[in-house]
Length: 624
Image (cartoon, rainbow, N blue to C red; front, side):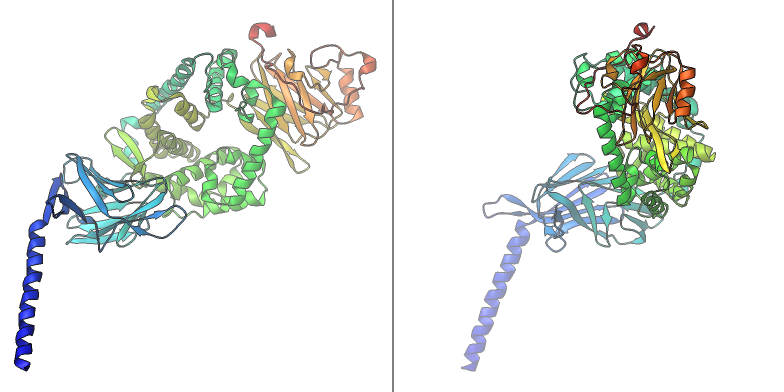
């Protein structure tokens, strides 16, 4: 009986073995390997056949290139995380295809697309890996492994250097751990490039190249300004899509060329009367009472941005001016300390540019504040240098394999120019010239929005562009102006009288906010006593209203001369002194006020309710 059991067991074992071998043979015969070569990029996939003979791609991908392989299969699966969650979810390969002789594309479940592209078919070609992610996906994770003969030279959270025989390659991505790289919605491209120690980028090495020449830079800027004017003048007169930045950049550049009133007339009336305007355009287009509210909001925004105390705070346009106005603020000092302590290994190229641009502005306006950022500036320069590469006759700037936009590159180049000029480093200045020349050489093809956005980034010699001016400090509080005047001077005499001298071309009209003004007894414009008037912007004359709650003077200045003086008196003696040298007293319309009416309305009166506004600018002919 025992013998029979053994025989039956052996028989069943043989049958089972035959079945297993048969299944293996069938599977082996039905599966096939797909192998493709794109330049030096090798792609290996597996394909099976269904019962009816149709080919089906298996979840097995292997892409190899110069010492590294990228893979996804059932054991080492690609994965994604969705917005709002940290949980990884595996994805499977669905399809693939060659897009060109040097590029291919893989599609995974969830409509995830992964593209591999080579720059050329040489052994040192650059490889880029781009993830196209749905809007609800935060990151894509791709496994990788080193090939035989490759070793890790150095590794950080976003960078991996690989040594392979006598060469070295560098992998950059949004995130890199020992077995996986990450691509995110913000940084969706990884790069794998040849690293040549003998050709490491430096600004000293490119300082003598043709693109770093100052004359070429000047030509680039001149052409850029002309392209801005041409683009704006190409708009139809009734254009309804003019951005505020476009209008401001256009008027500022035209004013620099002596064509101020022509520029004002060229701006569509739909913009002047539109609701999209803010304090930014107020110096040109009046409506001061309404626009001042947006200035108050902006100053509040600056306070919040400074209080956040992060490196991203330095990206705020105008932040340095806020710091100059409030140099003793604890929050400002804390943010500067945070910038000074920035880690060069984790800085992004735009964070480096933002810190450097802040330093440049502070260096020109408050050197003590600028010195607080000194510990970071060299780290910022090094980060920018490490993000640059020479491409033929141009410099390209990238972050983890992703090229910067033209606006971002302009910010980087301008930061280098101004820093190099501040510290006398010609190599850095020329490096900045090179970047600007590389990215703005084709500005004739830029749209108006791009030209307008770049203008305040690179143009710093135009005093007619709206800007902040710190005039002085009264009782510990700053006195500052928002203006397009080419110069403002603030003086105080022994009687306490404040004189504000405004430098702007004769006959032209402009507007300004002056904040930090204490309530005064009298105001003198054109050497005549003026009264507040809610309709001051409608008259063919200078005028004002005063907001006692905020201590702000809302001033219209119609320049009868290049230098106009506004005098504010604070004492009876000062008022008497002014009256002795003043022959007439007028209201904002220029009408003479009778002597007995002279004290009916205090100088600091502010009408209640909405103040009606209209355009107050006049042509040069009307001003005569």
